[in-house]
Image 1: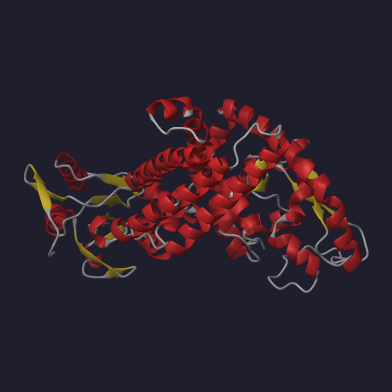
Image 2 (image 1 turned 180 degrees about the vertical axis):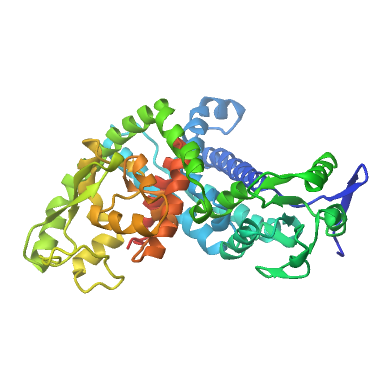
Length: 477
């Protein structure tokens, strides 16, 4: 291709471009960190213009604590901005940064007015938010302009034209994984040679792998064979790796691109090793998660008490009846519990006792209820469920026993989501949102299982931050 350069390793030529997914996130993080550090320094300089101090290295050393307050806080709030799909588009980038800036200003105003008079500066934080927003937005637009171009994409070759190969090709297309250009497929089944799988041609067997990779300037091989690799293909893959051509397994890449697991093709032993063993033995994470749940639950209950009079009055004025609504849901291990919500439907919405999904434009939902749902305020009473230990701040959303009985008949491993506590918000909620069918439940389960498999403190924090963005942007359903 014109304008593309490559370099040689032994007898094999590899392209100089093609950032890995981890490298892209590291690049974004480094740029954001530089913006935050520069914004802090510039904020301190602007502060000297109104405080009468002299800006110097000694002054920066005296005020160094602000680098350890503002920069980490900003970077933590940016955790939700390292979704490469969101980072590739100006609209989602701008919306995310606006949400973070607004959240920082609101939080600081609360702290400022609660602190003793004169104990905290006012202009410094304002300067910082305006500067870091402008600098980071400029950096992210530069990233979109330069690093989202085809020059930096990974040129990939899929090894295997079965269900796994087709699944990864569909995932790249469905999730707009512009980080990859899949140029072809290698498969030893001669009947597939020359055919298209997901719009991608099968270029031959393993005997052509090195040749195709060299001519196509391939950056990466995607191993889409889920069983054992034998014979000549195994040796050819070893030769590719020896010549510096990296190999990634299809399930790992599928999870990285989509943020979910392909449960239609998984075996029971995979679920056992991926979920059950982790949930059983990761006691330190469980302890820390419970501590955070208690802190977040108490803060949430305080917010509930403040908003309760206004929400209760609005509900009662539009639709006479109870303010709260309780319903039986299943928690960890299938244990039933009563979930609490603000009532968003007309009274006796399910008078016939039949459990059913709410439609997108459900006529049973009141006008106040729609507002509460869009801001997710209807879930506020569930902070009580969090404090009592029936729920967690983050986890799969709790489902009704009647719905679980139906869904587990149609969806494999559906009860696997009961391995952990249900959550007030979750990975499926921020990535998929509203669901009103079995197909929707299948998609959301794939996100839930991804969360269970990869659960960690940083992932919980990412979900919480992105949930706040949903609340501030009134994007709930």
